[in-house]
Image (tube, rainbow, N blue to C red):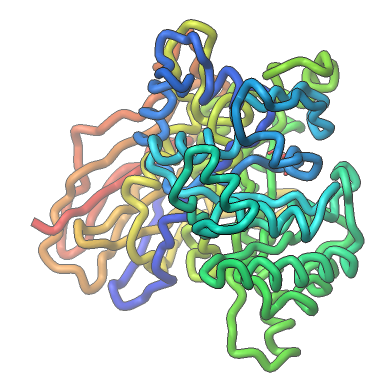
Length: 499
Ligand code: AHR
């Protein structure tokens, strides 16, 4: 099969905000307890932080982590999670029907974030709580001192403010599963008033309003329009969430899911711009895709989970090679929309729907999905180029024609990185590349993630079954065009560098 990719250095989609490679840690399952916090584990430091997990987070280059939920946040009392550890109450976490011991709380997260070199994206409880508690929390975190909540922080050993810049005004507030679910008008009013109050404490913060929980919500995109009608001037970003799965075991449909993600982004963008036009505003609303991933393998098991335990095994997906390809396609979709999607969080980071897994006693290990994220995060920072892809396509029952070749390219001081997925399960691509306006580039890398078995997984016992391979044969140039082969069913990172 043949395909052609044309790019030109003058045709740019947008500058990638590094926060596009963010992630998410929720108090959920073993994400925190037994994941990033595991006192007594051989790899844990004196504070109980697992150093092997921190190393893998650093390897992934995650710049931002959303915390502490998710659904968890909507019944979370942040005050329980600060102060002397021995005096913190044990609580029922209503979202995941687990026990929350509060041994790892807000300040531990801030210490962990520093160690992992990530910035926090803090979510506020606008479910069971509201404006007052949100104001208190921002005062606790960001006000220097001399007031009740900032002095409480100081008394907890944090003289300097945490200076948290990015805040989410609730989580999935339209969801019937959410404790404290709101109607669109009710949420819009609460979000607008909360935003006003928070900015009085710290005018430098950025705020994310909740969009719909996913594109198939009956109130989408009416919810977005209503929320923005009230909040357009008060917030900086509107959130999107979406999870994908292969319940029908149909590889073609599954690999096409990034097309659905792109159409979701386009619809939310159109809704934002409709409100912008209606308000005659000069401000353009940016998007925060703060939950995205593959999530379906573990759902059946999770229905039988034993409630009211600490750190239960929940949402523990065993990601296959085909899941990694879908994650690759989703990353390409996000990059292609980097002009509007400024923040994105792979949900989540450790153990629960996560690229990083831990075992009791054993070392942390990488799931299949770790690798496309690693490549994109390491080489996908710069200017996204507006590619022209010429590829044969196949017919998806739900999404129409889908190209076998999915690709994007990012230019930076180093050179160009091309990310490409060959969706064909049987045929390799002979790919012709035209790099318009770029002179003297040298082919530097072609790494491929492929496995003959689409259902192959990595496990604690066999953690390197699905890993990328760096090819010996690099793209070759002839008459100003580059040629290379993309194996059937593969994720590819192709790099050209300036000498
Ligand atoms: O990431 C898991 C859950 O998915 C989050 O708690 C919630 O926001 C979403 O529904």
